[in-house]
Image 1 (spheres, chains in turn red, brown):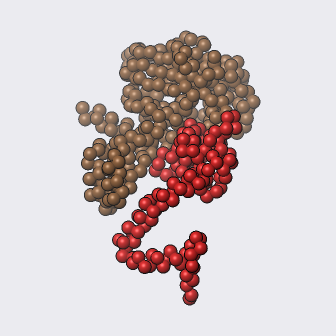
Image 2: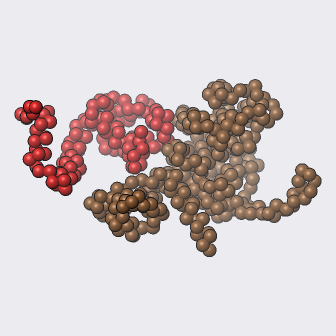
Image 3: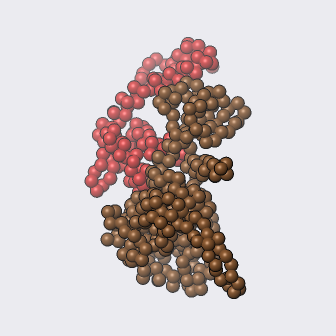
Length: 129
Length: 318
């Protein structure tokens, strides 16, 4: 856990953001304490605290005096808006650039996307054997 | 006063040993050559943080720790230890020294008496000593308190040292290569206990080590010594930012690395992995992304090896 190339506090922050995004951590729900982080992942408690203070600044977490860190109301919406904005630039664009290198026609990509039965309710293209 | 974490500071400290004559156990006389253990050492160990003191064998780590514990005086310069804002010279200063627990490899235990007797001795010296915690730790590390330290294996003697350091709850607790002889499960049990107890009883901890890889995540702060000098003393994250690894095609990587000092270069066929000093500028980062070069962090262990090796090379070049 947290073995990536980025600083550990950055990885902890992304991990918490991902949990809020996926709904694993609900709004007003308590986050693990710095002590729990430290002993669970064998890291310095100050490293976890650094991740928390960044998330507090972003408005994802807030501190309840004497109780600990909680997920802020509206945190998920905030993250959704932010990540949606970055999705096309950071996820889709590189994938399309790769497709171009591999000579994959745009039509194939569109077919694949439609075949995946989008959740937004668009018509599903079912492939028969 | 003693329950506030202690900070420590060295200012331009030198420790030099004079050449001297010494009587051996056989009654002959032998000349001990002098040497320089520390020279111009300036660094801070912040109060309330876990600091890693990193250095190769003979770099001056143990001499530095002896100064902090008031075991010796510097040949030149000043040493200050104590609660923030109230740091004093630890030499012959009971108010400070009673708050500093240095665990040395030699153990500082009564070798021929039962372990329990040593613990009683420490309980009398350390105002914050927690006897229940000491008993729990001995249990955890499977050290029999009815045995004498002389009858323990090296790993168990180290575990006894770890127990003394943790249970002392001293405002400044120093472990000088305490892991020596411990097997991996015991070392990890020690790291876990250290973090747990540090979180519950905040204090200043210094861990000297050259096993950087497995302990680097414990450190908030690092001090690196090499050949008696302080190479750096800064937050661990700053030290991590001192290097960047670049992996990709040789041409692209070398173009990016051109403006930087290269610490290490490794070729894996057409792929090259280079460790450069410092980090990439934003423009270089974009260039790296465009040319398929992966930029990543360098583990402290690697930086430590690079930093201490390059100084060694410089010395031999002279």
